[in-house]
Length: 257
Image (tube, rainbow, N blue to C red; front, top):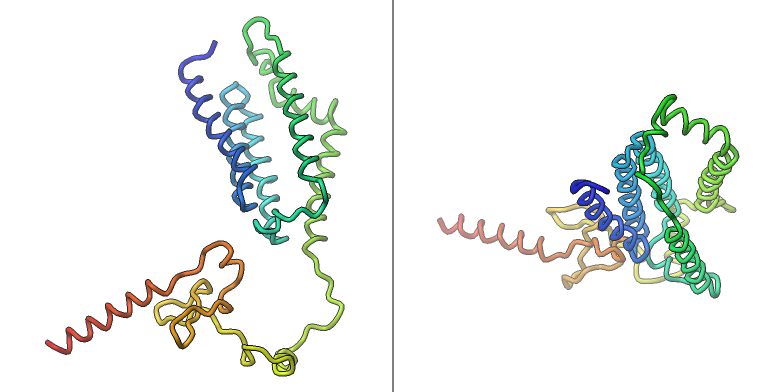
């Protein structure tokens, strides 16, 4: 039997954990999926704390939410995966296979949970007894399950090395100079012989998310990174035009006075 506070804690945080898990599955951006997974990891750590396992809860938050998730986000930033890349099926049939494999794991998990029987009142008093929770967990990690622990460490190191290999681009030729780039533009022709229009041409803003304007007042699409365009993080010229009109109105009113 659980108290009212424990029941509220479980249902509120359990709901947030389920929403974070759904965000991990259906988020279009990989970083958002990582944040959803991080929220789930933090909530699991809180559950461990509520179940009288403070060391396991704190370590779970530090290791999984801190180290592992930050490593995952670092890999995403290093490799540069966006939401458009995740929609491309590079291996035929891998989505169907993944769905079947996930459904099988879910069925196995539900079967295991349904077959659990609890006798007596669940308690961690025996685990927290002398010599304590921390020495007992250390004996399991570095004793009975030492090889599992080492294999997991090797997998994390392999993941970091794999990210470095994927992000590394070997240069087969020397880097072209500015003069060579200029000669190439004039030799191949095109719409931007003098170079691409630079971002941030407004007098009140010079950030890279502020596009340049063409003579007719329209936005020069080539002046802003395609990544910012895909994310919808490009400033519209309307806010700067309205600010310019306000300044002109103030000047006119001051001259009339």
